[in-house]
Image (cartoon, rainbow, N blue to C red; front, top):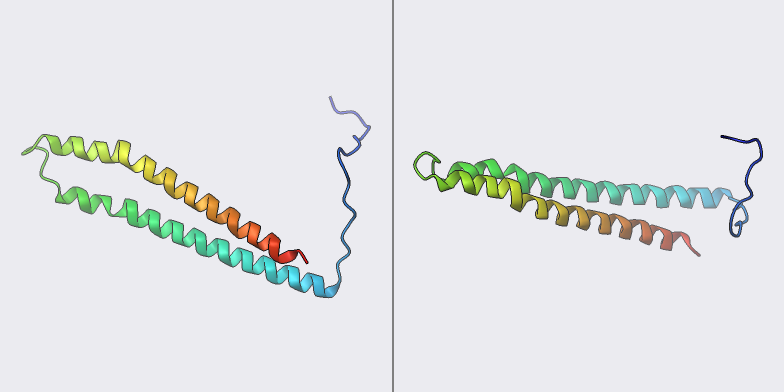
Length: 112
C-alpha cells in the first residue's frame, strides 16, 4: 500500500552540479563521442555475429549428403546445438566488456 509520506534518501546526498554554457557543450561532445563509440562497437559485434552464423549454411552445403553418409546430420545438429552457444557467449561477453570500457573511459574524460 502506498502512503503519502516520502522516504528520506539513504546515504550522502551529492550537491547539484551547476552547469555553464561551456560545460554543456563539453558534455554534449563527450556524449556524442560515447554514442559514436557504442554504435561502432555494436556494428562490429553485429558484423562478427552475421559472419559467424551467416556462413553456417554455406558450411553445411559443403558437408556430404545425410542420405549418403548418416553422420552428416549429426554434425549439423552438433554445430547448431552445441558449438554455436559458447561462441555466442564469448561474443556477448566481449561486447559487454568493451561497452563498459567505453563508458568508463567517457567518465574519466568528464572528470577534471
